[in-house]
Image (cartoon, rainbow, N blue to C red; front, side, top):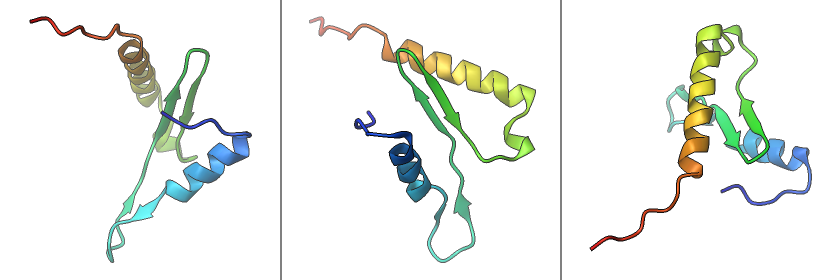
Amino acid sequence: MIPKKDTWSDYLQEIGDALPRQMGTSQILLEGIVQVVTDTSIIIIKRNQKRFWTRSLAREDAESTLSIRMFNTMPAKENIE
C-alpha cells in the first residue's frame, strides 16, 4: 500500500526515483508501468511513447486494473478447519 503523501509532486518524485533502474553494469534498464487503483481513482503511468499507448494495451490496462480492483475488494478467506 502506498503511504499517504501531501502532494502529487511527492508521488511523482518517488516514482521518478524508482524508474528506470540499471541492472548491474549492463546497459539493460528495467522499465516499469505504474498502476494505482483506489476506491475512486485509477492512475496509470507509462513512458510517453506510442508503443505503450495502443488500443490493445488500453484493453490490457483496463483488464489489469479491473482485476486489481476485484482482488482488493474480495472478502478475506476465513480459516475453515
